[in-house]
Length: 124
Picture 1 (cartoon, one colour):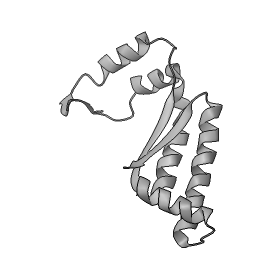
Picture 2 (cartoon, rainbow, N blue to C red):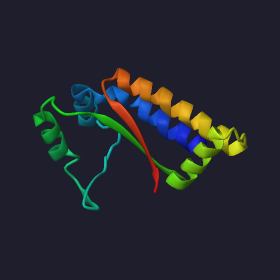
Picture 3 (cartoon, one colour):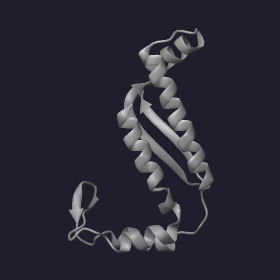
Picture 4 (tube, one colour):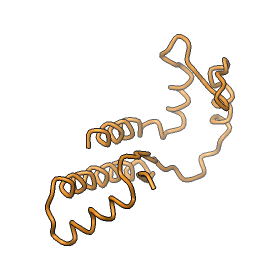
């Protein structure tokens, strides 16, 4: 579960950047001497100026969603473990899944507080 804890905590600590003004301010003042930007796999040296211009021009409309991509849990395994939990089977894996579910539900509550939603994507 450590991988999930790291990814979820990174997502949560960056919720404050869902505020567009704050995000623009942070991206305008990078902490690296030579920040990297890539377009189609090629490094570009405008330091994301084009992205910042589009972000500045973007309206406040639209829906914001935090998506956590974590390929360590397949849909098939999730379904098997969920069925085990419903059948009352207690194992290390079913307990780990229940802990993961609690972590993700708690993270979603935090995300909803920032007028967004949270989705977790595992492997197919």
